[in-house]
Length: 271
Image (cartoon, rainbow, N blue to C red):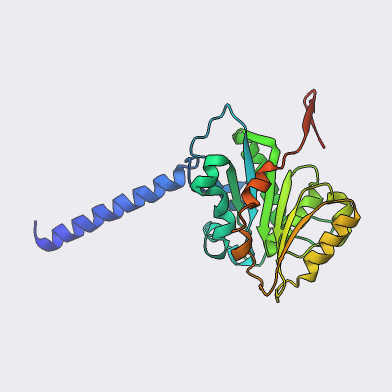
């Protein structure tokens, strides 16, 4: 066999090995201890890519909390990578750090909205397609895995922060707590969601989503009887996540929140 033939043969083998690895990674959609790429398709043929992190020592006889992560505008697309990388890496990855998983083994769900789409429909009666599909994925994951209905959490930044606010008013009975970062909010929804524990973050010098958006929402929640936690960073711009996800109490605060769930027959009653 000449050297040219041998070289081509080696390259083919390498390519086959690489492709097989790619196919195996795509097919292994329940791998534990890592974010796995999946694609959701509903009965209407609508699709949405998403990433799912399964705790490394997942035991189906136990109940696990789940964090729903809504990426910012730069996470949009179809690559199924941007929602957990780049500017979205901190928000998606803080929950999956080994030290946090050791204390709080939890699922993390990161759906991906398409280009030019928004999570929230502020002031609109209809939920956006993106947020509706994200909720459908959440329901599907809850049906597939052993998820604790009392420990579902929502968090997101920028466009995703606005999505969290909209999500809470669409499903005020669902989440145990939420962490919206620098997201636009509709103060008219405050009475509906004042009972939900939230920790809100914003940068005082944010030129993309003015800090007044969070200030007004926090004030409205307090006026409605809520007790929101609010952290505003002086001189910080839009990328508030670079500081918020370094807060030492954030992870423990989130997982300390729990909804009361009582069962009456086959119906869950949440407070």
